[in-house]
Image 1 (spheres, helix red, strand yellow):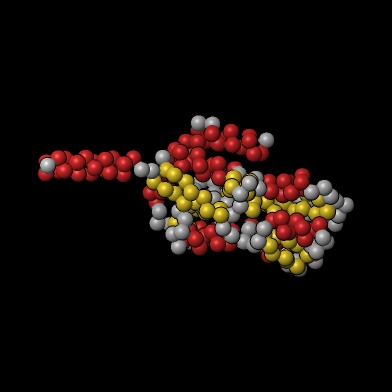
Image 2: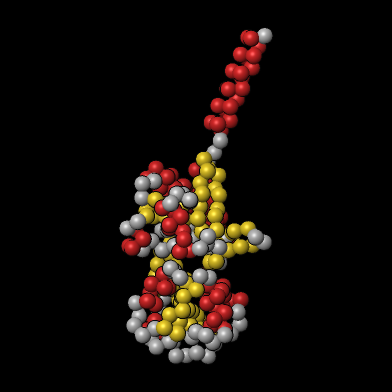
Length: 241
């Protein structure tokens, strides 16, 4: 009987070790689902280009990806407090952010554009924002750019759609936003257009903690692989062409 029990326990132990060995790593990813087509809510689920991209990276790394939706300005603090392992949210790898976190190679090149009401011909450059009331998204690149222009009255919002509503209600004269989300809002809201202004270029990258060098290497390799095997191009075609 003792031999039987011992054999049973050994079998259970081996099975337990096998299951543990087969268990995938979990990667918690922070995002802000207020930035279509990169990340947004569809029937309560977070989806978009960035979300599909990070899920593909998870497949290559043989890891389970868990996406957590939070405010944009709370993403990097959540990363540093180890509430998430990665941040992907149409985030620009600025020099200021690089002081506290690491970034992967850029995965998308975007630009800042200006949204105005149709018929507003007074804004043809970023310099023309001087003396105007302008909506920006809190913590976004547009916030940084407009803050550097003297004489602008800035209205900061936590979500892009709030800035768009302010423009439609004539509470602001323009909205500065990343190009792809801006195109979406213009398409969905008749009466709004993109100003013919020179766009400010920027590059999106995935953020990680500075000491997570092993994870950074894995993500970089996975990103290179999905770019090489056509997965990345398929996502670009799906969301932007």
